[in-house]
Amino acid sequence: MDIDTTLSQCDFGETVGDECHKLSYTRKQGMENLSDYSEEVQETFLMRARIAHQQDKTNMTICMHHSKMYGNVFERKFNKCCNIFNSHKAKAKGCHIITLRLAKQLISQKGIDVIPGWQLCRNCFHKARKEEENDEPAEAGDEIDYEITEFERDATKEAARGVMNTSFEELAVSPIKTHGLSKQRKINEAKGKIDRACASIEERVAAAIDVDCEELKRKDP
Image (cartoon, rainbow, N blue to C red):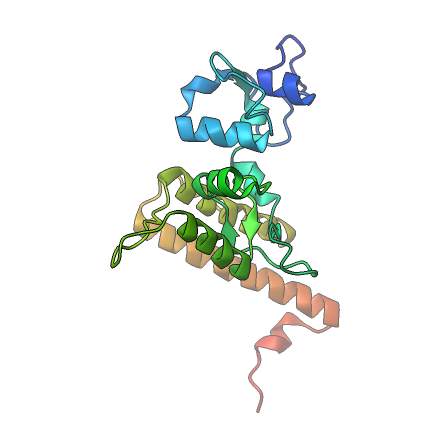
């Protein structure tokens, strides 16, 4: 399927100078109003495109391609700590996605250049939370509310699925699909994926070492 050349550019593509309606992340082409999304998602998209202060989001449009690019796909591209505090010289694995709220807090109060969807390692995450806690002192005995929003929770799940699906693609295992599945079917789906992934790994390791898969299954005497 080719790009429909009759479709005009969306405001995101025009502002950042990126081609619209590409089929890299979605098979759908078309235009949406940014206002169709929640305020939180609108802010997230604008910050990820780095046009939050350049655009009046009223009547802004976004194509399907950029909706995916700055949405679910964005988190999949970042699996290393962004090291916003310059705490470590070597690259560290990211294990905490920076939420919109935390990003806005670090930008407004610390002037740190950070984008929601980037990741932090455990140490940097704790430091970021400490910075947030220091800026919002609580009364004695009170707990800081760190409840994440539904969008942030879904983004974390989607990022995890993206990482697994990338690995599954290498193992010739079909991608994870959970939409519309009951809890029991999700459990069965997980078990099936694990079995198929293990079988694929076994075959590949056997081929790499040049042994028969059946020999690996035999118990040692």
